[in-house]
Amino acid sequence: MSLTTSIKNALPPIHPEGYKFIAIFGVITLIMGWVWSPLFYLGVALTIWCALFFRDPKRITPISDDLVISPADGKISHVGKVVPPPELDLGDEPLLRISVFMNVFNCHVNRAPMKGKIDRIVYKKGNFLNAELDKASDENERNSLVINTEQGEIAVVQIAGLVARRIVCWAETKDDVDQGERFGLIRFGSRLDVYLPNKAQPGVAVGQNAIAGETILARFDDDVTIPLIRAS
Image (cartoon, rainbow, N blue to C red; front, top):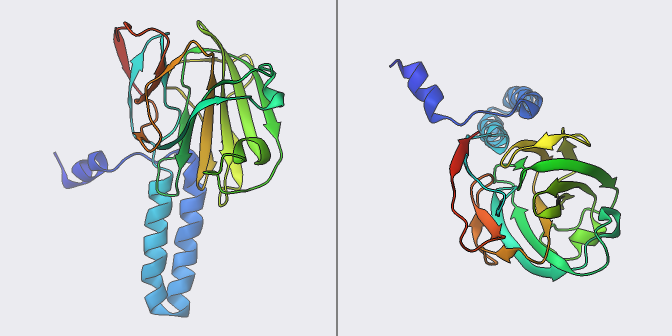
């Protein structure tokens, strides 16, 4: 195996969404170095950070209609019942919500928590509060996907944060999505909320770290087995 191949295999792939930003950071780095040479090294560090921000590593996803998989890398910031935002059209009764906060060092590619068909996608303008705050679910800019699954309707909400100013979603209404399938990302630091029917049983706790496409957030059956895994 050549050195080039070894290095390529050791580095995580970059999502195409990030190419233009890495190029911009690279050009700015050259300009900074031309203005004052010590700034070149700062620019190199920022360019490396930008490349890592848009990393898109393969994940091994547990596949089951009874499992809810984390849609994001990050820290579990909320587990409990709350009334979902009205635009989701999921009723006015409290539902189980599990929130995953992504800081600027997490991988930001978002994945579908369950297999199903996207019934509706709703974008809502809002503020850019710290995404760790509970009120960010109601006040911040967000993009919501409501998915019809074997367990009923669930929702996954991309929430912009204090630094994040751009929500990207390439999924479309009526698309079929597989568990762990990529559907979007958020630039730079944010949060995802997952709203589930109350029969779901949470399997994570606040403060726990989650891995998109791998960590089991909740189950609908305590005795569920995992018959298949998918690498993606």
